[in-house]
Length: 254
Image 1: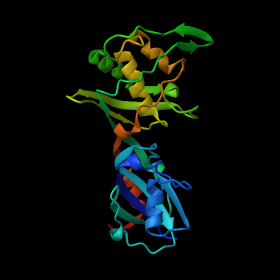
Image 2 (image 1 turned 180 degrees about the vertical axis):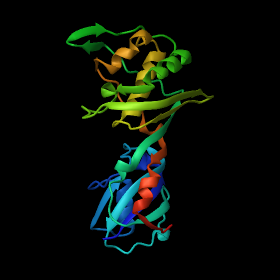
Image 3 (image 1 turned 90 degrees about the vertical axis):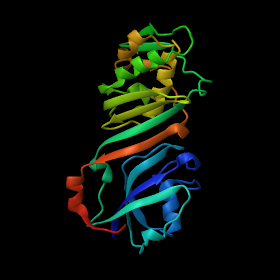
């Protein structure tokens, strides 16, 4: 079975995620259906959440089907590049980082995360603040605490096996209609970016004290921040170990 590396982009609003699911529209599922692929194996760099878009993501697809990738057409999915591989690989092992952009609409402040407790070694710390008018300066200041190698256990869905991530940069741009958040790191947990955004909004509203932000990487938040709307999140860039990856590439198909 030949294997291919696909570079894809997509608008995620109409999809339930990336990986194939029974009776649900997904990115890989749409590609499989277009080429009528029944027998396959796949790996992917980023399993973006339901509704999340991507300017680039990478999929490895192994199948017996003869595929003419330049025939592919979809109004919400684009296959940008195709490489033929010498054998199947787990493309996630070649990933060294990602950049996400969350364009937070300024009118999205209709529901707030309300923190109550931070639990450290069984001791409960009251972290409830008093709601105030949103302050972008507080929001920006709070975002800086997320830079570095930390445990993001409070910002994932469920319990992460390995919650340690390294955020290399976190830029916030205050625009007319949006607060643009540009976050780059070595890896991200499930729903991590969206939960960070919800948390930062609460800090901006005075609902969580800035002087206790460092503690969220140590203790347990009760409750956890809920994930922000996925429609405003885009996977903008994927960084791969191309020097190692080229050893597995036989030819450029598209």
